[in-house]
Length: 147
Image (cartoon, rainbow, N blue to C red):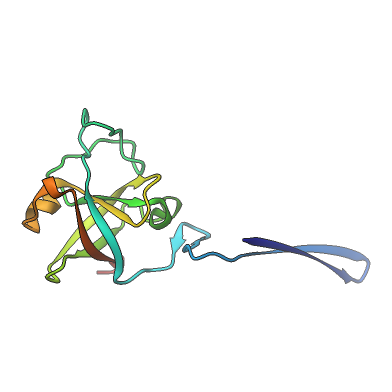
């Protein structure tokens, strides 16, 4: 739900109008300059995602318009977490049920997905998970840029 308040301020002879907007939502907001509120230990469902050209339902990655090898540590994020592209090229740390961690680069948005991290087959293989299962419970965290 979003609300807007307009305020008139009289300064000498000039009349100045200020518009103040307020958004109330459970979703993180993207601040000016492509910033986002860092997230830690966010519960999610990891799904199998293909990033190579010719894979069913796939297209070029949203972040760079390119296809990527499934042999990379790469992910797509639900629109909420993709944050309008603010996480493009950023890294997240994925923790599995045994608390093993893999760091992956965000290259794509999973539009229409809710609470999902679409991971490359390379990530699934490194967690020693069966891709035919199709989903796994994980937690993810943003990796600071200065690490």
